[in-house]
Length: 110
Image (cartoon, rainbow, N blue to C red):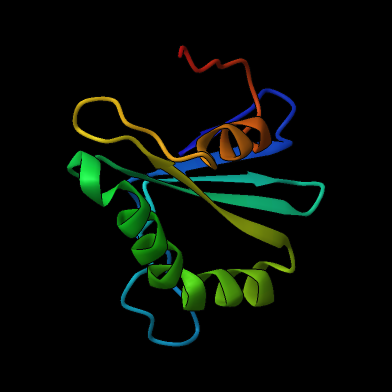
């Protein structure tokens, strides 16, 4: 777990989150929780190029219940951000939208 100097942001990675209800998919790759009431659940996938869109849809469904439970328990607005990059670099059209919502500096070379 990493916390910013002013303790406004907490970053968790590779960590299972305990929930009140039993939820099997409770371990996204990265969780960024901000004290202002927002939370990003970031999951990364590297499928074959032909499965980039399919993998994104799978991951959204995978974390649906977990997202609802996090919003209820932590009283935050939560979003699932998907970073899906095909094995040879293929990306979905929504990748730029997801990257824009993640704090910090980053860019996507095309």
